[in-house]
Amino acid sequence: MGTIKTTNIEPIADNGTVTLGSSGDTFSLGSGVKQSNLNNPAFEAILSADVYPADATNTKLSLDSEIFDTDGCYNNTGSTVTLNGISVPSYSFAPNVAGKYYIFAQVLINPTGSNNVARGICEILKNNNAIVTSDLASNTSSNFEFITPSVSIITELNGTSDYVHATGYSDNTSDSNRFRGNGTIAKTFFGAYRIGS
Image (tube, rainbow, N blue to C red; front, side, top):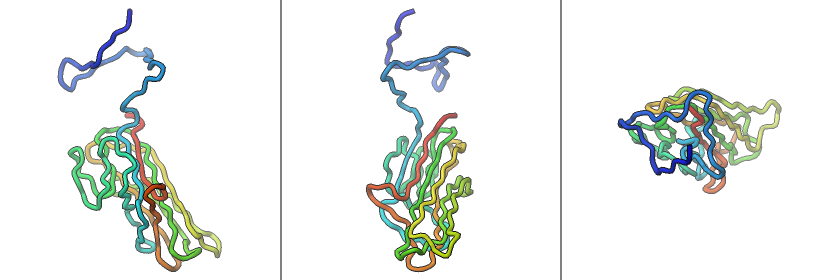
């Protein structure tokens, strides 16, 4: 059989299924061909400027600057909004496609004084329940100048109501607590992408 050339393939019925091949078949992409929707939905956001959270308190990371957001599923505002028909809390990602997602976050903790960080935590929460935690603490008499706990996890998101967000925590011995942000360099960040069904 020869080459089939077309611009679009759709099922006969709306929202139907098109099946290519059968069990054991292999489909190869030609050299240089890219799959347009690979790993979507996906996003990454950073903290655009320093914030000064309360000491020894879990604080939602207000990651307000989007590096990218392929499907408009990340809320980079301080209020709950509706995206793709889903109610999305502040600074949260609620993808509109079900599947397994790789999710990652980091917080750069650097109080205004020197050697004041005794403990730093970064967490990812799914529907307000922690699903992964990184907990770094000083076990000597000397505390840290700065600390960067980071986390990553693969989890299922249902595409209709599940959402995730990241939090930071710092136990600071003196001076002002601070999560570092920057408009161009990812110091404190949060992101995710779909890896499959």
